[in-house]
Length: 98
Image (cartoon, rainbow, N blue to C red):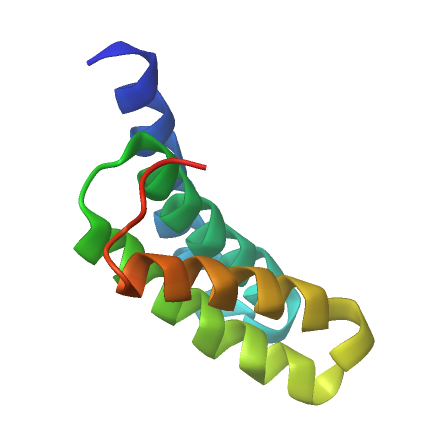
């Protein structure tokens, strides 16, 4: 699998774990869940693999960050902007790593 595959698998495991935690206590774990989706999207983007999955992860992160921004815009506004920027790049064809 290699280090890249390990990074992707780890990012996806974290998403699954954070989804379980958020299911039991959404308010406490929502920021971590949003960050996990963002990380999984970014890992896929950097690795240049499955841009459709990266877009899906970005969309989930954007949805969660928008929810968080409604409550604490100062704390999560920059994260939302970063995810939206990557989503825009992926939407235009992935534009490769970085």
